[in-house]
Length: 314
Image (tube, rainbow, N blue to C red):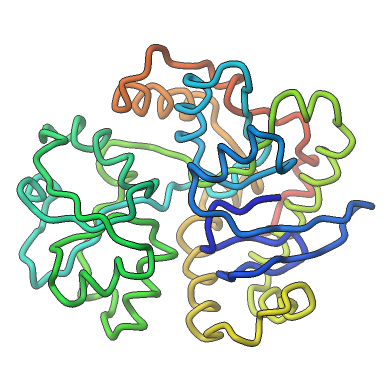
């Protein structure tokens, strides 16, 4: 499996963290290696090329990829987060209190940043010209320092990556002004685990076993993040080099804001409201300028999910 980035890569054996190396585990008779990716675009292209059986990434980037590459359709098999973590982050001292005020502002982000790609969708909804902002390209590791130093007035990104990284730089949540896409007219789902449609059709038992293991890891991690984090050295040889405090805070932030939600408490991990999903696909398709809005069944299959009782954590 390929992670979309080094941020919040989830190992379905009770470990979730940012890391630069590989994670190895065994689950349901499968020997699985999770390797670091370089963003959703990288994860999509390598998955489509057959280099990996599964990959983690952004559902809406996958939708766009499928339209441009119809010969190799990809499909989500797990929705990891009930709420999309993407947004625009600024500091209260910059005086930006409404996303409409981002017009004319310098925003720092990597060129392939998933949240950056969603800016036009948000801009269309709030009535701002998507071209009105000035994007400043930067490496992922430089994004938060640029904001802290005032070299940009805002950054785009995912909350579990941005917020703990800013805290490490001495900036508390109270000092942040955050415009999460889901709070401004969008109702997006978060990161997914995806595969090639052909692969899961040809290997349903592997898909079912992998998804069951992945979901089991999510459930156990939500139930006891400290215990889950403590298992990381067993699976990742570079765990000792991590900033333990920051990474555990990142995991807890992810659980509290994106995994443990009213929907998932009532319906389990990877629960999906198909009407909500279809609406979000239509919103993003318009913002991305796609030719058509795919049906939800083209984007997600729940065929390989374990039963509801195995996906409950509360």
